[in-house]
Image 1: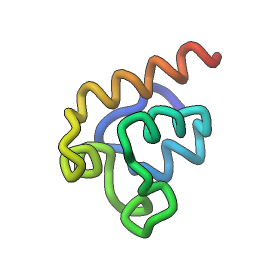
Image 2: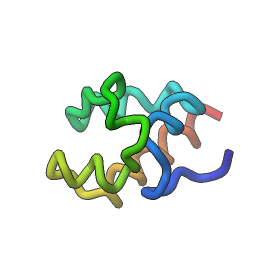
Image 3: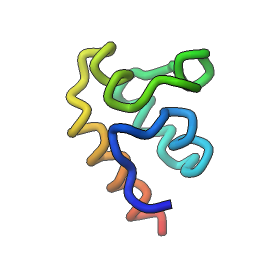
Length: 68
């Protein structure tokens, strides 16, 4: 998998990169286990929680880059 984008589903990101859980927790997204995580993309999830999706995606990518 390449870079994370805001169009990707939350659950796909977490399944492919479990190390990103810390970023979701930092932003207060406890929705990893909820039904919306299966179909909601990162942009929609971020906006629902009042988070700038660009900032969150950048942090997610930083985490996967440093873990490789």
